[in-house]
Image 1 (cartoon, rainbow, N blue to C red):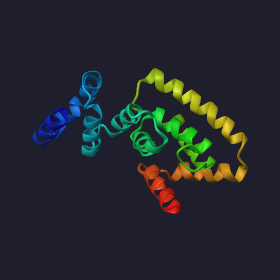
Image 2: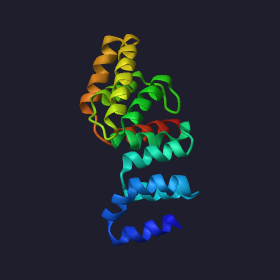
Image 3: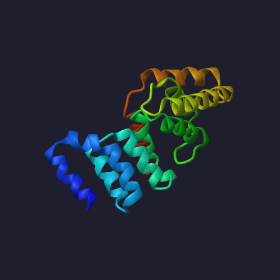
Image 4: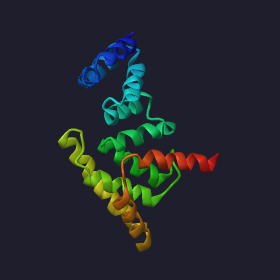
Length: 171
């Protein structure tokens, strides 16, 4: 299988699998029912985590229960994922509604240099900027200050930690 081949190649050198990641994802998506297995293999090996997590999220049908993949993609610099987290936290879909976290992710999407296509990123940035402006109108001054503090103290991996904390509170 392709996943086994990638597993074997990864032992020969992680760089080879990393270089192949983008090319293989496109080819496998079209030609193989093993696409999801390949993506999980890439994710487990830390290969292009942002893009891999985003592709896996899309491939699996953009399910609310896959928000952890969106977090990995967002932490990996995928602006589309950062914007989506803003929307999810704003609406409470798949995550507890939290306007301060929505603000955080919209602001990250606006300010992140991103890893995606520049033209596409600019349109997502502009959408995030507009969403941020609308969101601010529904927040108090104190909430905005707290959200800015979240932004100032944000570090990669925070989204996954937030999800873990939220799930432990609901258990």
